[in-house]
Image (tube, rainbow, N blue to C red; front, side, top):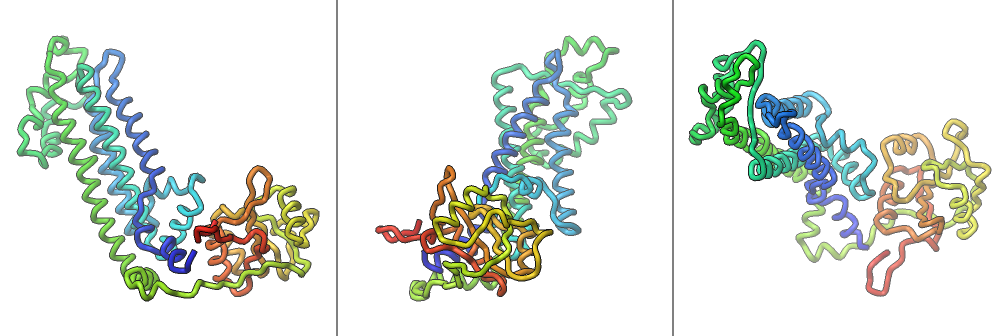
Length: 379
């Protein structure tokens, strides 16, 4: 793989703007389950209007306020940042996460992912809503011990302000009085228009759960594109991609060691199985004794040999360790206890990481280096 292709894979603005679909799928699933729960109603099939407003109005507004407040005054905490803590991401996806963090645009990037996730939540909710509208007789009511219809009506009227042009979806004081579910008002049980609230609820979902998120997503994507467009590294890469003559570049040749003659202290950073390490050492003739593997606390000053899983992206803690130590990084890949050749994208990532530290070097025996196939691609 050429240097241009390696760089474009990690550094192009398209990668920083891509959608992380697992976040979208999980949010959509939550939308399906939550909407089904609130639209199922109670034992009598009655659906509390206040519960729907909680999910389709209050929750979206509060989450947007929290996200924007955290964006400007904190680290940008939102649903997407929470999901990045779950260990489900591929090596390439973790590389993108590290890159947006290095570019200092992670807050906007996570906000973008959160808005797409929220849109998935809204679409899933609408699917459930339409399905139940077509297949069941929805019975909307509201309950309150201290509030009367006249107290609630002004608030609902304010909520419906964005769609004043749709008169059928506006709240109605008479409908509000008739759909109050109270043990003191038995006449309400005979009212047949409990389903008339569906247009108001539908408009609420579209306005506050969907359209508002789509606007915020577009603004966030525009802002993120500007920030990425100002990044020098991406500007250079874009120019290279747009100029065919510039694509003929020598391959990046970060220093990689293929042999090891020094007797180093060994650290098994990713808990690679000892039998895999021993097999690797035997086949590659590396002086590695699994009996001499130590913990970080046991390591002494000097050079270290750090063994890692090739597909595990290095986290900030690992980079902090590299800043204050020296030695060799040995990425190992295996399948069913059988050592395999490093994948090119894994090799490139570890190569780039080692190049950031003058005191560290990547160690890959020649037999496990990525090789070119007959079709010119690298495995």
